[in-house]
Length: 152
Image (cartoon, rainbow, N blue to C red; front, side, top):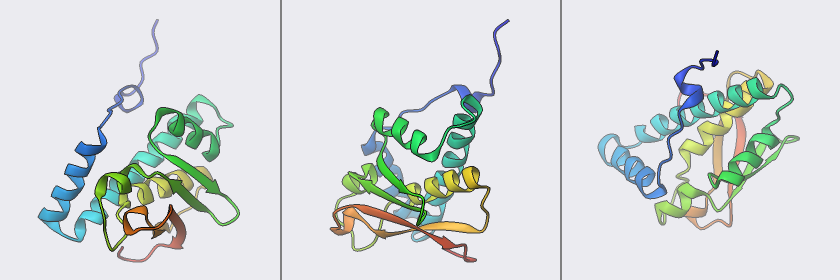
């Protein structure tokens, strides 16, 4: 008998970068700064679920394994530095599609990295901040671990 998996473990949705940018910019135009919170929250849930699925398929799966898989699919090219709990992203799909900005724009990725780290290390009360962003003219996007504050 075929094993039945929950829908979130079977279905995949591929979203073109241009569509994702349309969603992000529409959110920003509609709800202003709160868009960052919405995108961060969505990214966090995605990272948590993705790490959960990876670990259910391979108990020894690491964050580096997951990032290698994502790079192979073309989703993102990221390096995890576990000693500082930092993520460095080159060629961010969000920053490259966003155009120029004075502020970091990769809120979804920041949340995604929180979801990965929270699940993998069983950490709570953390969050990631993007401290360098390609959309703001930096050579890469850098995401640093911070303690969770009451607001983003």
